Length: 74
Image (cartoon, rainbow, N blue to C red; front, side, top):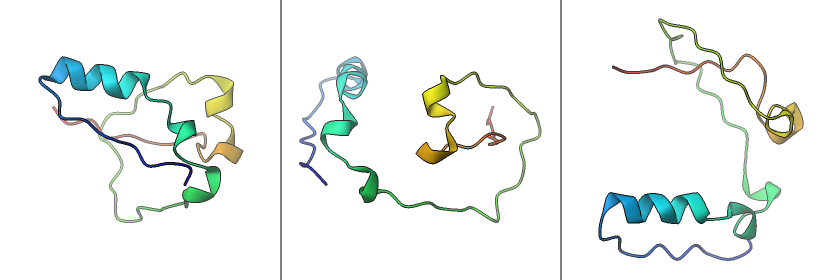
């Protein structure tokens, strides 16, 4: 871990959203800070969806693999 994130008190949701959008997590974490996790008991979603990701995010080396399924709640 490089340095801790100081999370301020937010006046409203818009202020909090702006904070998280502008935060560069690469300044706070290193690749070695993360570990692969599995969720064997998750049930597949009832509706498949497609996501278009930039190539650098779809690289299995970065931990994002093709064929990941997400479940959306209504």
